[in-house]
Length: 291
Image 1 (cartoon, one colour):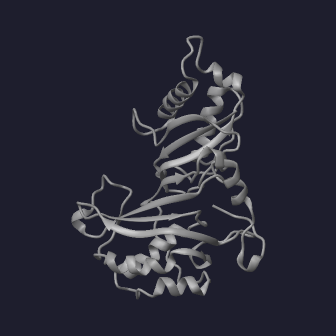
Image 2: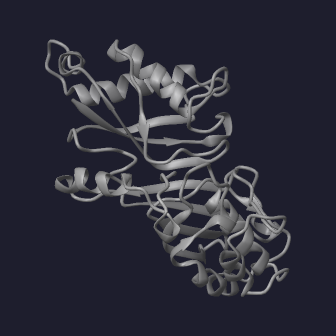
Image 3: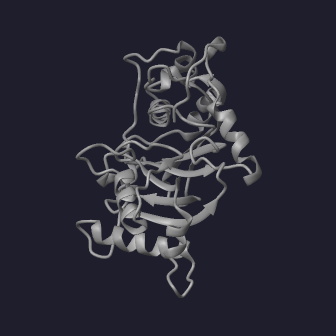
């Protein structure tokens, strides 16, 4: 049977999502805990592989488990095995997290049985990220570590106008770190900035998927527009150049959060996964997709 888990984490203490020998990663922590509880090897497939220092509020992953082992988690009293798995996993994650008692930097929010056709990565319709910025000293707060501090006040109206050139389906080669044989074509549904009541800026980006480092590069580029160092036309020019060169501006990782992942109705899980697995590329050239 297949289980879906929804996860939140603070990225500072991890070397990204993906398992790496000798390094603490989100995938490594979760797989070790789940394997211990279920007593069978667990391998997670995730919606989006976040980089080191990047956080997640709405990360999603799936794994397959033997039905009898899963049912046994409910015990003789017949408790909900999904609830039991979540409770036991979170208790172990709290004990494993060093530094602060009664706290963990990764937590499982939900566990649920799902269709065998569900794929956390390929069934996803879209991913959404947020990026927080404090552009006045009065807004700087050491307790809010997921915020970029800027000395110059940013013109978010100019940033929003400049962002319009990036919306739609494009080759985002100038905005990402390409992987060999992987497509850099993505469809960007939303990209905009707003201020909350306190004045902190939140950038919001939503796309069918993002290439490696794409969101941070878009944010870094648009910040240059907001502080007046570049013209509003510059982000669009960079897009059309389709060249990752010395002009690239990559914003820091710590204000970036994977906010949510969107999925279709369960009846369309398999169809969407098949569509997403198809090779995409410029001029019809086949190439594989990346996160």
